[in-house]
Image 1 (cartoon, rainbow, N blue to C red):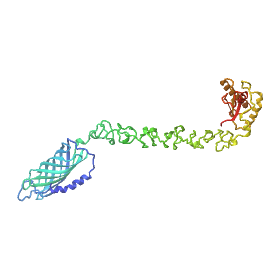
Image 2: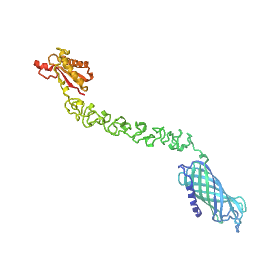
Image 3: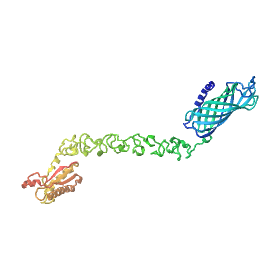
Length: 476
């Protein structure tokens, strides 16, 4: 390459760096193009254009002049093409008189790389012909070799910057060198509008769905929610999601997409459909009465440390089992007075007497003598009224007292008959006291027949003792 061409290289690189970049695409081929160019022609060695005279006054003077022209060509392959061009070059003879010269060129070129921007080399032939002036009409053939850079910055337009060494006649055959520095544009008319079958603005060659309108972010495929996952592979096509979730959303990042997550804003395991189980007791928080304390399903997720059926939050004694009526505290005798406050913890008593039985009540507990019935009957004998009326007075005096009335028989007769008779007698006593004004909710009755004797049924005395009515303070 001529030294002047090497000096032109920095200009080529600077021009390339300032041009906008495009996504990679090959040159259209086969495709015709037309071009324009301009630049400078530098005469480096004597140029014998016209008739040579010893004086040489009409020969072309050494120096530089502008040039401009047109070219037409064919991009035969993405890397190879051929073109025909013409340039107008104003020159000056040694005698100072100007003239205009036409240069004709036929060139072939080869681009060294694929893609939009590529260096290339060219080789061709042509000729010079003056159009007038003092330079005698002549035609000088020439050959040329060039290097340059070509850049396709639009699908239909490329920029070219090149340097060419043109060899023509001088004082000796082929003894002239003209350095041409050119910059120009090539326009590909047939590539001005790429084929776009679905008319979505994306050329078919770049469109992954050429028959369905789409968007550039999805390579030409439809993407209604704009999440870059095409609708045909988007499991949630109307909600913008993540590519890794096939276009769906997992707001709480628990591994379940929102459409399958019963609690999309709270992280939870798959077994509870994405809902949390804060205390890890196997019940999701939405079904857990105590979501921050591990409990059991039977207690709706609440703990019951002493297993008395009362959850700790409502159990006054959470570490000791107790009945519900004492709020979970132990009450051995069942009188609704907790053991810690009961002065008689093994005897069922009254609350007002700290769990103990007042003397007046003690008289009417156990087997009550003096309550008699007709033989094989539940009819109370009149001689029993006095003791029953006294019992009524006690009940009236102690309104918190609840009385259990139990009937017993001896073993004479059938078991079933004895059971029925004992229950009827206990019920008769209950009804007598209710008739005297005692609220029925304070009185319970039950028959035991011959099942709980207190004496020997083989003697008359023992059988008489076993036929009895017993009073006891009822369980609260």
